[in-house]
Length: 196
Image (cartoon, rainbow, N blue to C red; front, side, top):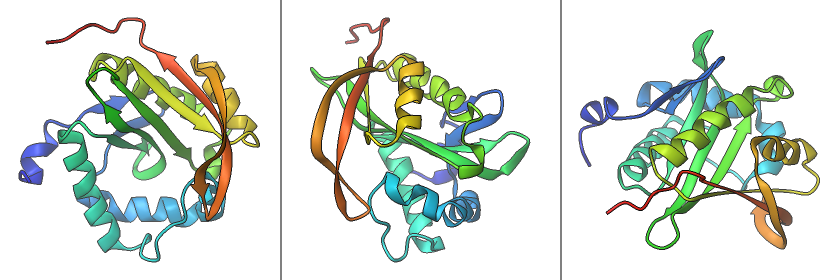
């Protein structure tokens, strides 16, 4: 793995009206842990069960290194949302996961936001930048996002961003120890180009 200091200059930073969207660095570990600790109950039904060491420095130091490797390997880009008014505070995450090249040129979008930031259009603002980055800088053809039918807020968000419903998948993801149905959506890149 390359030296993390030399990698830092090459990492993207997206500035929205109220957020700075970027990959985390080792110095962000405490802010990340605080985000997840403060929002534990709120985020519990949105993803897989957390490992026992999830809220530890060791876990996040290793995860940050893995995230940097995945970015440089064109496998995933896992952004955190930092409050521009208070840059030491993490307010959410937005990930372009499972990047597939070749004939596919797609990825999966995942995201979360602090409970106290819901309903303020901050997530939409951040995702507009992340999607634009995925389509322009990464030249992805399709970004897919899935949500649980009970999560109407997420469904509204995706529709407002221009995602189209493509299907319904039963027992699609193991969320917090329980298999959950998901509505499948996607957005296509209108400016995708063939690259050699």
